[in-house]
Length: 489
Image (cartoon, rainbow, N blue to C red):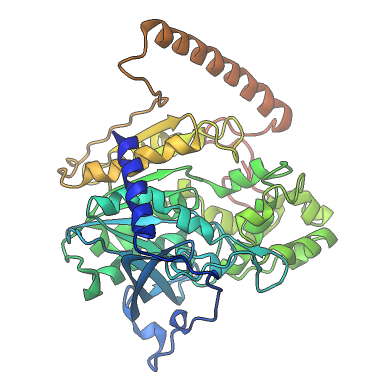
């Protein structure tokens, strides 16, 4: 049923894009758009988070091709990672059959250090394709991902839900700064509700969803909502996420020295330095000073397979080969670690792909551990929490339940105080026509693969990371700068 909804939504959105539309002979080129700049006379700090600064209505674009669907874009006041006022943009898609009481905030996985890769640029038809970035060092194409994500939220539009798509990384593309992602998302929802053109009711139910970088924004929005945006939290009915990065320090360790994902290490260093005003230059060696400027406006597509084998040790001076010896790194790594953050108060769904390309074989565990070891023991009679976790065969299948979960939550009663449930399992696809022999063969071979994977993970960990913690919340090693738990573990 879920796959049928996805297919129908994708077909519907494609039809919208192509019906009665003549594709332009030349793709739209990126431009210096004044809409993204706050130019009001009053100080930005004088506005409350979520305040509307500018609005505009334009056609929704798919790969720079306009469609009949209209989008309302809003420049709104938000907060950056250091608590400073910031002006950010969000896009609101309201289908013709819109229901004013149903809203889904879709957090894009654009994962980029280039502000022009934000989803609002793609919505406005300002996606750079094939040109060079501002630095002249990278080919600009990251924004095309936002157009491809239409297949994920297309079914929601077909059902009449209003879809809000914030630029979660903020105006400066602060890659990997999770708490900032969350605040940008929550203030985006405030702004969407404060804009009459969106038609969103004040009491509208709101669902959150996102994958990968979008999952970071979704989860941090859920974490921060009770304190940062209680007015939004009271209307949240659930959050669905896939490919969740619980502790980015762990993910950096997995990517460290890998063939395809090593460049993400450099992206995270640049993004966190930008978000938290950190000067890593005193800790960088010659290669670090040469490599990092090359990726200062790169998207994740620019670094995949481009820096094979690069490690933190290659970037840093020898005396800082252990990242825990860099106090600024330890401080920011603990700030963006979801395991150190408050517990969400809304129903949560986490889908993890067992074959996620950026993860080591054991990396599915942190998300499940976050739910079972961090969230559940901390729930009380006053903080209802319903958690569903599911391990899927691939990143493609993990997105399907992330779409259906918020749909199922609309109109459902809130969980009773103190209720906690966790479900976990491998997503298998079977049909009524599948024979009993085929089912038996599949289960038998699945068990063989799982046993083999467990043995491989054990040998892999012991050989490469002899001191890696086996549990998310326990750590046998200590930080060299006085932290009670090292984020590198």
